[in-house]
Image 1 (cartoon, rainbow, N blue to C red):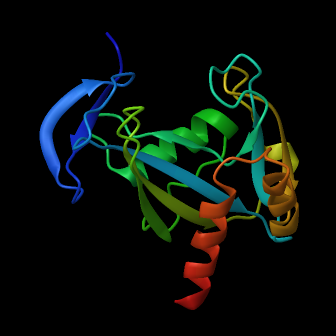
Image 2: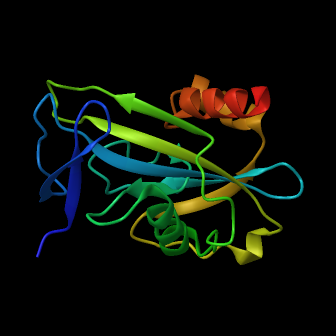
Length: 171
């Protein structure tokens, strides 16, 4: 059976509708994503390089995360995604996102809400266990390195990451 997602309205209220993960959404339908900024004690962030066989943004750099499955909230999803993708357990961390945003793409049917979590953990490269289907590599990068990759068009969500960190600093 195909993975299902819960559908939300423009105000992020659950509609009770569930659709297959790959469904093209109507303009008034949204799914939910969760993303993880995982920062170590040296203030470096864990970033991964997307598999080269991905249909979208193959080879680009990103932070761990993914789609929230039907019946999950974004925190449970980010705990699952980070464990699957990079082998890092964030379940004991603060369960509140530092930043959330809405993406509207009525033409492409790719409407979503995204919650960005910021986890500060004591980990090293030896703790990272990549899911080979998702990523071909990883590294620990500073904010400046992420910005540079973004300016080169090689980092996904770099502007949203900056907005998340700026919003968190203001609080």
